[in-house]
Image (cartoon, rainbow, N blue to C red; front, side, top):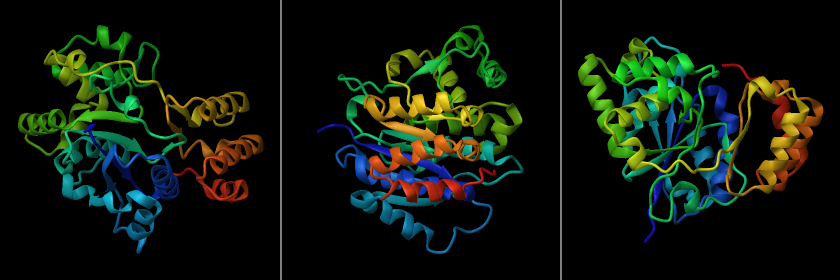
Length: 302
């Protein structure tokens, strides 16, 4: 029997519309023989919207009975940090609620356009797949260097090539649990506060801790295809947007696509039409016009 995975997404109020799309995509293209569980982590300022859990779970279709919800403050007590930092911590803290030996971290912006196959997640021998990149000129370089210093490794090598900061990202559950336990023990506070205090970032922290232990390259295969995304910095560039939509439509090796919520308001009319047509083609909306209506309602606020 092939390995099954859990999938975990942190969601806050501004992500609710994109979470609907992710749920529908998982229902359409998430293989029940791969998807053991789906954990939705609620990072809301207040209580969950009335009826939201039932409505979202239903959109997962045949996977609806595998969906569970957990409040972020159950996983790790809240702290006076940004929503971005709390989201990072929750991606690791959720390891305590995962029953499978691996889990895939998603953001609300991720959605499937093609069937999810096991060979996207792991090699034929069962080794989990990831991808990485160069951070020499990357906006996250400072976080990477700080994280490397925190775990006691030279940032020189990781700056040239290290784990991706983007989702989907496959985590080995026991490794994440050990990381959380060790960091909380060393810092004497819970994970969110510890990460904010030390200035580290979640995927860098996970990868650097494994690198410090000499395990990263033994545990992971670096050949996972990179999933395409539309980011805030390129949402208004029709050339980039249309090229990524066309490639995502045709290339099923990387089944996930992503549209950042803050990219949506900057899309041109041409970009919105192309994205709406893509979503309708893949069954994520009944009609392209419905997708266009959704896009028109998104303001991209934090």
